[in-house]
Image 1 (cartoon, rainbow, N blue to C red):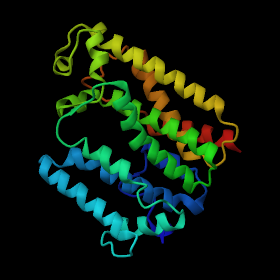
Image 2 (tube, rainbow, N blue to C red; image 1 turned 120 degrees about the vertical axis):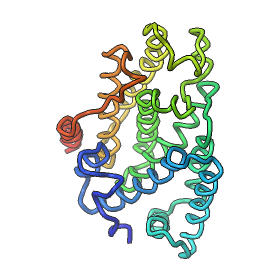
Image 3 (tube, one colour; image 1 turned 135 degrees about the vertical axis):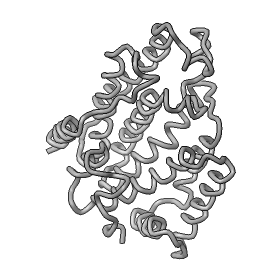
Length: 276
C-alpha cells in the first residue's frame, strides 16, 4: 500500500524543502505524499540526468507505460506499483498524469519557450499537477485544489528563475523569448551579460507578476485544511524569490539561491500553525 513508501527518502531528504512540507502533514498521509513526490521527482530528473536525448525519451516512455501497467497490477518498479494503488485509492483518471509526461518530454534536449502561454502550460502540467495531487491526498475539496494548482504553478515559476543559470548551461531556457526580445536579449546572450540591469529588467517584471499572483491566491483561500504541504512549499519558494529579487538578480547566473534548513523549518511551522 502507498502507506508503506518511506519518508524521508532520497527524494525528500532531511533538510530539503519537501521534507519540511511533508513533515508537518498528518502522520497518516506522509507516506502517500512522499510517494507522490518520489514519482514526480523521478520524472523531472529524467531530462537532466540522461545526457543522451534518445535514452531520456526511451526512459520517459518506459515510465509512461509502467504507470499504465500499474493500473492493471502489472508494474515492476516499486514506485510504479504503489502509484497504481494510489491512483485507485484516490480515483484518479487513467490519463491524469499524461500532461506531466507530455511536459517532461518537451524538456528533453534543448528547451526554448516562445511566449507566456507556453510557459503557463508548462507550469500547469508540472508544478500545478503535482500540487493538485498532494492536496487531493490531503483531503482538499475542489475549491482548495484550484488554489493549490495556482500555488504549484507559482512554485515552478520560482524554480525556473532560481535555476536560470543551471538551465542555460544545459541549453534550456524557460524564460519566454518574447520577454527577452523586449529588452533586446536572446537566450544565447544571457550567460555573457555584463550589465546587470539587462537581466534585472525582464526578470523583475516576471517576479512582480508572480508575487501578485501568489498574494492574490492566498487571499482567495477561505479554508487551509488539506493545503498544508502546498502552502509550505509555496511559502518557501516565495522567500527564495524575495531573496533573489532583493539581490537584484546579480548572482542568479552563477549561484543557486537556497534557504537554510532552519529557515525552511520555521517557514513550514508557521504555515502549519496558521491552519490550526
